[in-house]
Image: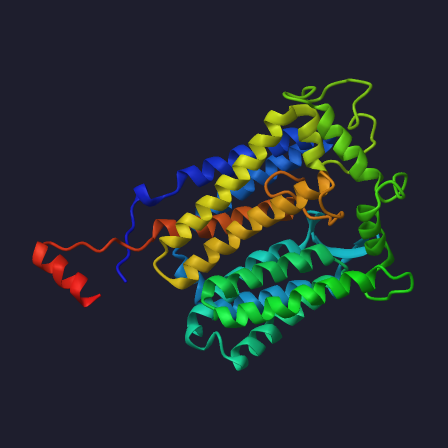
Length: 386
């Protein structure tokens, strides 16, 4: 397939959307915890530089080393298992020697998983719907899911599986298989929810069960596990149209009163709702939608299947993580502990998203060239061939 390159193919709009959303996040993080704002600004600068560098490189060249990408993913997650730092009853971080910087490999695992399976599916696309190939892909996925859920990080594990399913769907998995999987998965999900709600269950951790119970009955857990979510909803509602203003000193502020702990991460949307109001919340939702939509659009113009899969994978991360995080902050879903893309504090999450967007930009820069026919006869002939 012919490749069309040129500066006019460079998606400057995607860069603008991500940076504007990131700036909103920096303002919210700075208001919630001022000491972290400088680090978040540094993360944005590093992320933008890496994004631009990656966009210049031909993504197809990087994907040639897809087995190395898979090995790197496993190696980093194994390093967490053996050398990781523990915090809040979880072992998810590596300390980078010399600079004392924390690094969370499970966030980068999302990007590496997309890159690996994008190339793998393209190479084996003719056998994708065979039982043998599906089993092989599940075997390749299992170590990644196992190492992440063992940290424990159930929300990221779910996100990784969602990404994998999206890649299979876009990659061309047979509709019959998809319908068959859904016919089994939906009842199985209902049974799973029933089992994990039992008092003596051993399927998930106790704190994870309490989060689900608090979501189903927030009044019962209003002073314990539902406390964060209830206060988050109050904060968002109190912002009304334009909010109370960034870094305000209002005594009645939910954020200033520390009624939402660690608001700079999982509940950063509550900060935006209270201090920027409906306008700020709408801006975040619109920007996330634009980022996801731009990724999907670039994916439809990709010169190959791998490029399409990468774009749809990154669009899925932006859309689904955004939906999950905002749903938690507004009480639609149980607390998952998943970051809001480009907004929540977390350098690994932020830089990883910029890395993924760098690949999307690279794909857009090298999109397929439209087919043109120099004569009317040639055009008619082409249509007859179809």
